[in-house]
Length: 113
Length: 400
Ligand SMILES: Cc1cc2nc3c(=O)[nH]c(=O)nc-3n(C[C@H](O)[C@H](O)[C@H](O)COP(=O)(O)OP(=O)(O)OC[C@H]3O[C@@H](n4cnc5c(N)ncnc54)[C@H](O)[C@@H]3O)c2cc1C
Ligand code: FES
Image (cartoon, rainbow over all chains, first blue to last red; front, side, top):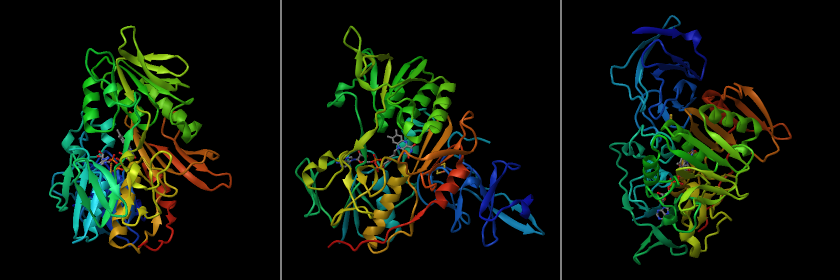
């Protein structure tokens, strides 16, 4: 696990993009107080999911509305077809730690990190 | 057993089938498609697919391993509809009765030369090649014509034309000239948005000819096409002509059906997408109250609603999203949400027009926010769209 940010860096119902890891990840704080981490780049095109809309445990892509589950990473409907990776999160004394998924990321065509 | 027949294997047709299965419909689903392709996504045809960045397989709307249990009847357009009999008719005289019929035939591009498509030749060595952009085949033909050094003329400064102009430039066109009917591209979004889009294109080298209403193809002394002819006599010459004059609902086949259509040919529906008992319509071919068609998200949303209406007709959605559209040009992401009448006050609330990253909010004369437009402003646009949802009207009872 590696430290990614502090809990105080997060705003309820919003995401932040963290570029200290490759590919960048998005970290979200839900209104229930849970922290989730997924790959930040949408699997359809190069959009930052941290800029999307958090609702009902899903993040909706800011561009074309595919919704990704924060728990499983699955996309609900086109245009995105592939899931994003979900990273394990632990919050300890106000610090957010993440264990990056060991799967290969589903980056969209043309996006390389 | 119950049967739903869907006409049109595009975004709306596919989404209807998929949502029917997602919501537990286990009857028969037949999807009738004019094209021989399985459902594919059109937006990339003027962008990454045209640019050669993705291949045809990546255009597919279906997810690998998906089992929708659909009877696909592709390459066989429906030619008629018996509304009271809820039956589709085909050119070979065969018919397909169904319990529910979903019309999802999309739109067809306006052409420069009517009526025959063959009047728009794409034959090398035969003068300029002339293209519309609506199918994979169109995109393949245009891509083949966009050789480095091409002189490209785009007739029409709508979204598809502007996107194709941007892609043509990226593919090495020597010049790209856009004939724009108004005084600037995308004029209906107001002066600031239009100026930002124009700047975005002109900085990359796209040239605009304004006040340019395209009357037809231009022809050289040899009679071969060499560009376009404007209604004031001006000409714009080039080796490749891209016709981006918008599209019209693809509903001519319904002429004898008795279904009401708008002046542009869109099928008139109620707020649940019902056109007649047992007949529904979604996507670019449909006119729902208060929505303008022709855009991706609306087609998907309408198709989902039609499927849910078929499964549980009494449940209306909680709210409606403001109409939404997006476009990619020169790598910039343009997004627009809401409805415009033309008398709005427009204010720049973030970004800048010069840097082509404005976030603009449109307010009606009463000061109510009615629309927003952003270029590369994903977070602000998403927030605007989500905080401007409206409660949906309660659902009328189902007609028998
Ligand atoms: C080049 C291009 C770029 C675009 N870019 C964007 C964009 O960036 N953003 C955006 O919001 N929208 C964009 N759009 C619009 C978007 O793709 C459409 O709104 C969307 O495809 C509508 O879906 P649909 O299912 O209603 O129609 P379609 O996707 O057009 O599907 C209709 C299908 O029905 C078939 N059909 C027609 N008649 C019959 C018949 N009689 N029998 C059987 N089948 C029939 C057609 O062949 C077609 O396959 C773009 C469109 C094009 C062409
Ligand atoms: S970029 Fe996310 S759905 Fe298209």
